[in-house]
Image 1 (tube, rainbow, N blue to C red):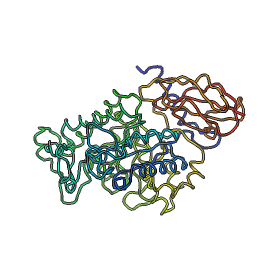
Image 2: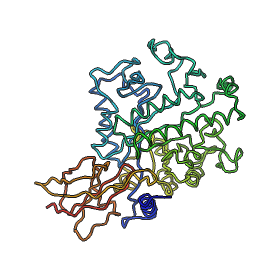
Image 3: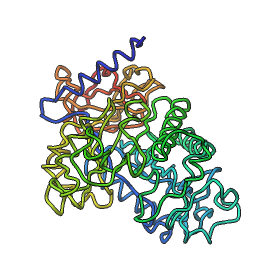
Image 4: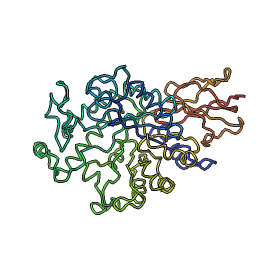
Length: 469
């Protein structure tokens, strides 16, 4: 039976989804951006230079209206954070296993700095990718690929964790749990790399593993089952470690083509289901993931994969979980399709931009249009967290606002109104800050109220208004 608190949260989510503020803008809108770390020159820069580079990216994203950042921390069985499970990444220091000098922890740094700007930080991991064949010769003797080579499969120019092995699923879940326990990340994020993208004329070499499994499933169905097991186990792991933390996927933009399945899209390209063995709508239907970000980087009327077809398809097939559209900033700018694409994506919960460093090409247009007013990351009412209490004791001490916050709160939203009788939390124009601290320095006079957000972004009632002159 559904609990009363969960019912309240579900009803609140429905109302929020239906509500549009008086300004005509949605108060809840996911506005994400990916910051990749593979082949981005981190290993050529000093610690100070890398930190300055990332701070510049975060400042640009904040000024563009972004409210969530995906930071790539596990490109190829390595870590851009302090890990006792996997080695420091070659993409950070140039040598696998070598710690940065002067020392810093990029994930810790990014969580702190993103939160300081009121933005969420999701840790982005690639689950199956291991070093390439070229990188193999430079691995240290204790690397897992050398000590337990039976756990890997070589395909084309790279090595991959064997998706059929439970030991590998357990390892990935250990890594996910370690990040969720030690870092205050808002989410765990996998991209589109599951079974590797097919190379013409080359079959992924798992025939023996398929035969040894004694399954009655076809090899394709068995592969999908292997990935399903991983996603389900990661989901349960996160729920047990930190209820409320989000788990999401950014899949390739086509689930299946209609020529393969009448439920598919009117497209003619490679597909998640048949080529990458990732059945993302199933994961949403099962409740294993919280959001999906299909990478729809094609033009509106692309010959093989038209955005005009795919954006509505993913919206219709959300299976009760959030859908954000993965957008290619450079491609949109090149073909001048920003307004069309955002209008076509109006039925989803937001957008995510590939890639962070390219977003300035659209920043002015976003801030002058779709991102003119601030927005909160939408809530996830199915997460097992209790609603938080409204902040209490809001006070103005020499121009600094302080309040007492519910310990269960993840962050707070600060609003400013022209009158205590004009408090309307559904007006995004009134949002002046999202903060992870229980203090805020106001930038203008007015009547301020504060609300709390729980770990699943459910919002509390407002505090008592306080005036700042």
